[in-house]
Amino acid sequence: MRQASFFPSRQILPAVLATLLVACGSSPADPALQGDPSPVASAPAAPVKGDNPEALGFHIEGARAWTLIGNEVTKGHDALELKVTAPEGTRYVDLWLDDAAGVRLERDGVTFRGQVDLRKVEAGEHRILLAADGAGEAFAELAFRRSQPLYVSMTNDWDDPDNGDDKLALQESLHAEHPELVITHFVGPYTFTDPGVTAERAEVLSSWVRKMREDHGDEIGMHIHPWCSFVESAGVECRHEPSFAYKNGGADGDTTGYTVVLGAYSREEMETLLDRGVELFEEHGLGRPTAFRAGGWTMQIHTLEALAAKGFVADGSPANWRRLEEWEGYPGALLYDWVKEHWITINDTSQPYYPSETDILESSEPTVPVLEVPDNGLLVDYVTGQEMIEVFEKNWDGAALVVPRVVSIGYHPPNFSSSYKSRLHTALTHYEQYLASQDKGPVVYVRMSDLAKVFER
Image (cartoon, rainbow, N blue to C red; front, top):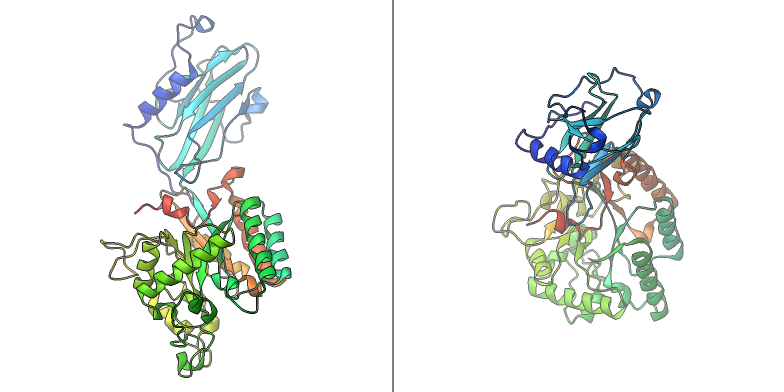
């Protein structure tokens, strides 16, 4: 792919290189360098294409192809600590970052060290040239990209009160095959109120998700379909309509409450439901959740305001309805139409935002203090592995990112299958070709609540 070029301003670079010079600790007064000229301002010529520093006797350590710009969630690469082992008789090695003046590395026999401060180096493509003993041609050119992170958010929605043991095992194997993966588990509090789930089974499920948090750093968020067993346990009257899935939106109603639009409950009722959900979570050792997704993505402004009042910081309900075509025209169901109408602007490249108090699709002030994280890759029920890769590539063209970006994908544990896992494995294997931890790109896995620290209000 063609890469965009971004270079730091001439106002920034002198400060960067001044820090580098201090870090290197060398000066013309050093005894080992008596009689050697000071580093020249202008960079030498780049080495001839195809030249290999090793073939010239130079071994370089500490270089990276990608350096991340850090934030409160992701540790950045604030410096490059370079070590050059040079041929016997080399008197000095100088370094140039982009078009700034050269600086000298610290010498210890045939080893030369320097630390390049990257904190003020802007996002984009950069290069370092290294030359020895005042040569007019560098012996090495080190190209690297400085980039904001490309976050991958994996979520799951506990639509049903129970998830089978085979589904739990498949999720464990997903973690085993992708060790850096972290998942936000949107747990349904109705797991703990449904009469069909015994206390023993509820403990198996809560113990399992706690273990995922402990072993892998996963997040436990909350997911609410307004199942009557849960709603009534909160002292709220259960509604049977409007339904997004049965009998033309609820002409005869959904007596379980499961497919009722969450926004059918008032803000006050929603706050009561959230209080009850948090109570159940804490009773079962799940902690206080701060990330949320509405059942059927049926979030509305008053529901979001209830989340804000109860300390939630992120919501994953904005849905990429264009990838939900399986529901389009489904007999008697309005899910596709509801999601399309309420999330009409959400698409493959939609990014996190704080919604306006008057329009959940706008970000004009004043805003609700809950970060909306668009489900731009949707859930695996509706997208193939190749489609998830397509969404990924629409959000990143291979160049350094000047702002953080997010790709969100996920699944439903109750119907998670080997075929669905295979789809996710295909997508994740592609994403992991660009992991920042392996110096392959800007990709970092993230918990949804943490995105509120990256995208500040």
